[in-house]
Length: 151
Image (cartoon, rainbow, N blue to C red; front, side):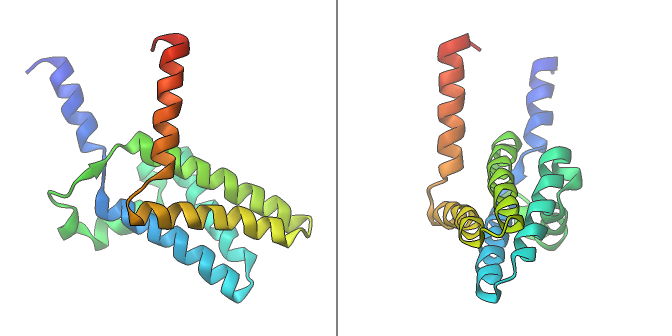
């Protein structure tokens, strides 16, 4: 086995099983809807913190990944996977939007905080329906980076 083949195999092992990806999407959607229904922006703060750890630390520090790995262990075996970089990119977008929401809530501009939060909820629900907007943005980012820099 060559080093390049082993590297590809190792990278594939780090990809995220789709049941965990769906758990992440459902968590974001449910969290935002629940927060709005209860008028509790602190729930979006909790989602922000959870995603921030996942973005900064990867799978090891992702609460949703760790729960999904244990609770969905049977479904994860042999399941389709999503590239971990794509998941981190999507979570980064959600973290930025939740961060902006926190700033808006802090400055008492609740409608703007809810708007940022609902952007995450809409993206999660559309992704659950089959179209991942963050994946589209990631592809466009990679495509344009290649056009500009060739890498």
